[in-house]
Amino acid sequence: MLKKKFSKSEDKTSLLGFGCWGIGKSLWIGAEDNKSKKALHSAINNGINLFDSALVYGDGHSEKLVGEVEKESGQNIFITSKIPSKKYEWPAKDDSTLKESFPKEHIIKSTEQSLKNLNRGYIDLQQFHVWNDNWANNDDWKEAIFQLKKDGKVRYFGISINDHQPENGIEAGRTGLIDSFQVIFNIFDQSPIEKLFPFCKENNISILARVPLDEGGLTGKINSETQFEAGDFRARYFKDDRKAQVQERVEKINNDVNGETDSIVETALRYIISFDAVTSVIPGMRTVEHLLSNVEIINKGPLPNDLINKLKAHKWDRNFYK
Image 1 (cartoon, one colour):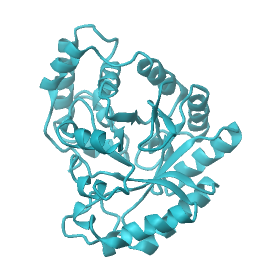
Image 2 (cartoon, rainbow, N blue to C red):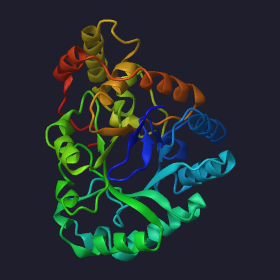
Image 3 (cartoon, rainbow, N blue to C red):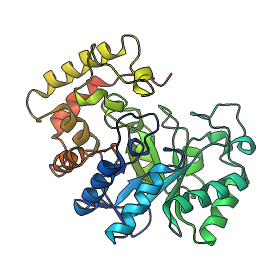
Image 4 (cartoon, rainbow, N blue to C red):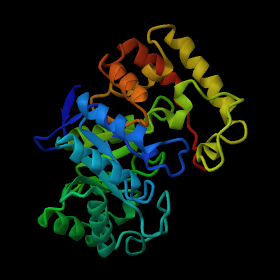
């Protein structure tokens, strides 16, 4: 598995990371701990070292599984987590203040709870789970980062950028305290390419590309007849006629690709790693089957330039989270 340098450090993280929301079993229906742990072990055995979790994924359950597997494997992996807004809002609203959302004591307390869940002395990368760049010049979040780093509890800090707002973080990035941005980037949402990617390249800030398969929309498995179980957030994400819209657009992508890849999943994942600004792509993986398929895809490398140019036409400006 290819590894890339993380931000300004000498650490290297795997080009394929492991998105750990689904294994937390909150809002995603069907995850089983024994299968999740087998997938995590298989990931480590296949050279993956970046595992992206969050305090709210299953109220700490995802973190606990990752921590258990790290201990069982005997390997030292690169674990990332996220601090939820104290207001528990996604995305951060324009009128929310830092004092309401990320007061210093909340940043530290949340990090300490994640460390307990992980059964670990430090988090490699801690991230704000949402952000509002109006807070960029406030000193409280900076003081919290300095203290957590001084105490050895956090090595790097980043921002998980609000859904479909790729530039809402650049001002914080100018402070020099941000080592990475986690951002939605896929064939449908290509917006980070315009300003965020050049900014990160210039300032040596890593990009973790999340939602690479559009919450399942770019798997080829969503059609107008697809049904989701009660409690699965995708029932809302793909509500009304959205499933039919996705199906139509995926068919158009496949027509343009015209057999140059073996599947829409391959097209979607290899598209993302074709951009040098991307340090790691982090699809959710709940089974060994998913894991091994994604490893095989990533190891094929970037798409040819002519195909990347064709895929520009499939940019889709919309927000299904609303």
